[in-house]
Length: 538
Image (cartoon, rainbow, N blue to C red; front, side, top):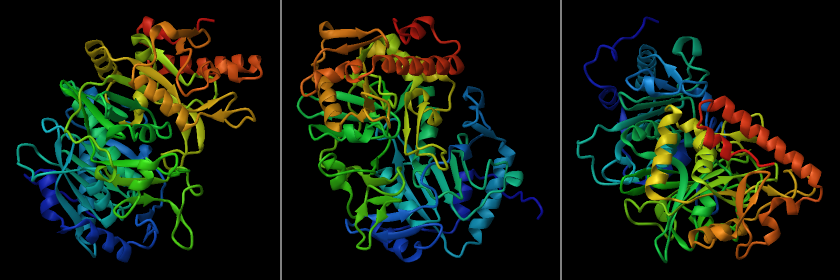
């Protein structure tokens, strides 16, 4: 087939070409999208039906993101990006040629794409970005309408971002300069995101999140992979940085607090604001007793991804893939912070899920240790959010607690983070929501309960952890409290929970060696004081 050139030769922007060339239908209501999904999107590669709790249940052909398929298009920001196996550059000519083939494919589809106007990413009116979604599937459109921010009509002051999702277009690596048969390509210059041959809903959010994590830090805005809430009584803001499975959503959705958001936030000169308008919670093993706010949000209007239903369409949250998800708009949570921004954080919590069972349930970090653990981003992959992961459980180091979403050179994030801490004097804590008493899978190992983690968070939020009550764990060089209300004091020193001290010391050394190897590989020029803060004293 001869090479197409109509996109390359157009004077219009890519956004205008997508809008003008595509055949679109604009849904009036979410119900219209749900009805279309059930009627027309109930066969492979996806399957859709209503569950007994009223949620729209979707089976996708993948149960996670595809980070290996993500590309950033060559452009004016290329020199500021850390190019690696995740941040792969796509030549602009290759991207334009790919877009021509995709748009030609769209023109030949039997049905038009769904199209939405007037959505936003970023609640802060000064920094929010207008976005439009063009999707082949109705449920992808519903995903975007639930997850992003609804508001007044775009006023034309900012160029809208456009996301084009065409799961029926299969890429060919040799032809399209892709890694596999699908692609997520982000064009920062043209403000266009292309998703081809990928159905997992989270690809939409994480593609936009990646774009914001690239552009906002260049304006001095620190973006973070975190949940956030604010106490009802005294208005204290807490950030919960962590990877999937560490408790961001569960701990930020606290009945004693107003929820700011559960996954992506930005910290600007006048405080913290949510980038999204919805929540994307993990549902595996969820119960109403443990996570009432999330459980009650799973109802009509919610999307459940890859949740197993029994013959009566009752959700079984204990079987199926680990990474089952529920997407619901913020208004489905009873207590939501109403403002477009909150104040500066009063506390920052790094959530880590330690599978070695040796980290304490809470430690107060020095400024140097805060930088060290922020750079390390240690946790355990649990029920991987990445498609085709070979391991359900494995230790991992993901810088900034979300490395795959942060494409810029590390200095942008580290320096911004340290500057914010110094300017606003924010205390930082490490909270282990993983194992104690033994490694994960061992007879003695057990995971900290969510009740224990909540009691620790409440102690942090209400200034119940005092410096004079801290003792140093030499094996980690971490300061831990002697007592916390509602927490068994033996738990606060992890060595107390191990029957075999030699095994405990061996596990500590193994984890410390992993930390040091990661820092040497990823941050060879790290400040010596920061590196020293992460080394054990014995």
